[in-house]
Amino acid sequence: MSCLVLLRLHNKDLHRSLLPLCCSLNLRALSSGAISRRLRESYRILQLPDSGASDPAEVKEAYLRMAKLYHPDSGAPTADAALFSQIEEAYRAVLVHLARQKSASQYTQSMEEEEEDKMKSNAPQHRHYLSFEGIGSGTPSQRERQYRQFRVDRATDQVLEYRRKEMEKAAADEGAMVTRDARLRSKQIKITQAVERLVEDLIQESMARGDFQNLSGTGKPLNKFDYNPYMDPMTHNLNRILIDNGYQPEWIVAQKEIRETIAKMRARLQEVRARLGEPMRHSETLQWKEHCAVFADELGKLNKKVDNFNLIVPLMSRQMVHYSLKRELEKILKTDQLLRQEKEREKESKQKEQMETARTSQNTRQGLITWMQNLLK
Image (cartoon, rainbow, N blue to C red; front, top):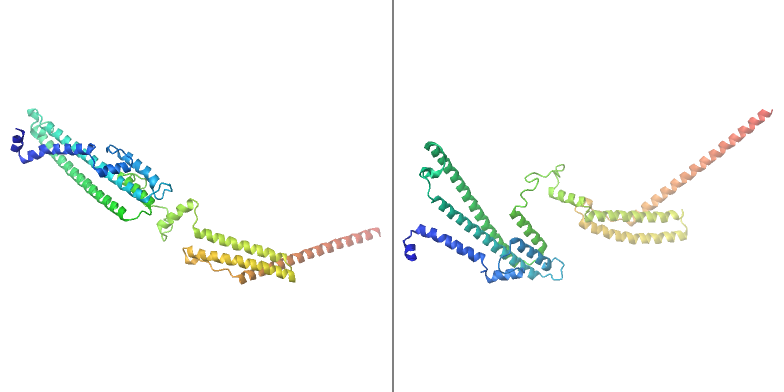
């Protein structure tokens, strides 16, 4: 009897009557434990129950726990690149399965709501509200105007709902294609920078959830480098962050070290020359040559540091030339002569002061003697 009834139904009625049944069967298949062997293997790799009852938060927590153990760059003794690639593929497969479950449940819920609305619309109404679908109040002309406005609003809502569903469908298709492409690339490309890939995946998941939509300053330009429009904003911003955290570029540290080293070498050799006489005796000459030889060795090592500095300095105008032994010795000898001359001038000035002081005291004594002699007379 039921078969005859189904055959007598119209095609559209048949489709409407069988569609909820198919959706319920699909939902039961997704919500039950009937999952494929490959999906069971994915749950087993993530150390989750293969019943498929885990939520996305549990799946993500399990993935992060496994990544800490088997990530190639984690530094753990259990790190394994091949096993981590399997873990990543299993994680993506489980996420796709959970997304399909969620979409199927939402579709079934919407179908149940539509059926409930149809049942409500088919319920017997009072004869007074059979016209205009029971919309509005007042006189028939007022109810007609209210009903027209209601139809316009309902049509607008339906158009917006249709566009929203199309956009969600397009986004879901695009996400599936991106996931598939990423899985294919992960099979072909050897894992060398897995930490960056893990961080990028977490950032993309946060962007998909909308975590970056309510940030302060969204859509506004940055005002941290308005004072120099000729500098690259990204480079300036990165340099500012590094400087704020106490970081100095390698070439700046190398330049500072070279300048401090040459200053110490010059001061040390200058002290040695100051201890020797002028002119130098034979023994002092030999001692000076030994110190000059040590200074030449240190200067050669310093010139190697200058070469390394020139390889890492970012600007040509900041490069340094080699320190010449001849010029350095000439500077030290010239500085020593100037210091000795200054000492001589200071010594002469002191002698003059002493002579003037002695002359003044002598004149004072003679004047005192002359005054006493005049007083006695």
